[in-house]
View 1 (cartoon, helix red, strand yellow):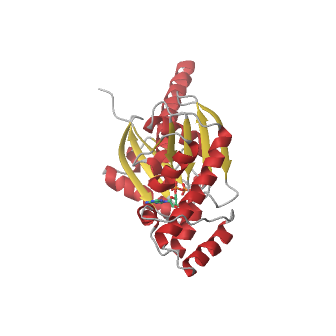
View 2 (tube, protein in one colour):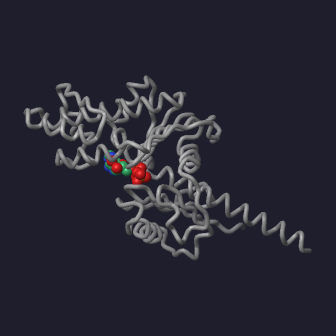
View 3 (cartoon, protein in one colour):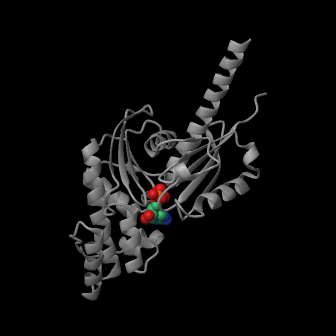
Length: 275
Ligand code: ADP
């Protein structure tokens, strides 16, 4: 009987560190998330937590792949892989046949156009401006004194359309404060924020050419109101998964499995040549 191979994917984002351990490149056996990212203790915390869940230690992990904004900083990694490649790989694992992936993280938005077999055809990315990213929602949730995980539920209670017209996070923050000073309700203001974020995300996605099936990944995919408004703007259903925020780490763990096998093949070739 063949021995199981365990690999780890670590996605060190701008806002959160995500870790996945996979068995044989096709089964998730442990996952962890630390809500701080690159340049913090987040990656170490996430690795310790995922190993705890796994019930083992690093010596049992055959290969580790790092991805995300802080991927260069992980000394335990055997390999670094770009975020785009990992998100494409992860999305095809979570949603086989997917053609468009909209990933909204803490600092950037990516739209990936894929061929339905896991191959990336094209992408567009915004990493220059916070509007339309998780950071925009993080800033607003602080102003509104509402937890990021409660924004969707609160926004869904809205009964009146409030518009956030500024395209800049800093000016939008002032607009939100002024709406609150004018006695607009928190749910109505949150709803305005969600529609504003969704319209920026949809605008970026349109540039890559949206083709169904469409999925949303990244932390913001947990906000069902943002997903709903992007879906309405693009006029296409959008699928999400409870594992959406782990998408990059899942892709990295699969890359780790493939890299481990390539290395075995290379070793076998070298031994064959030496013989
Ligand atoms: P990164 O990889 O850049 O660190 P993530 O994909 O981990 O980004 O997403 C982080 C963002 O997700 C945060 O900035 C926050 O806005 C959003 N987020 C995190 N948790 C939740 C949640 N429970 N509900 C809604 N949004 C969330």
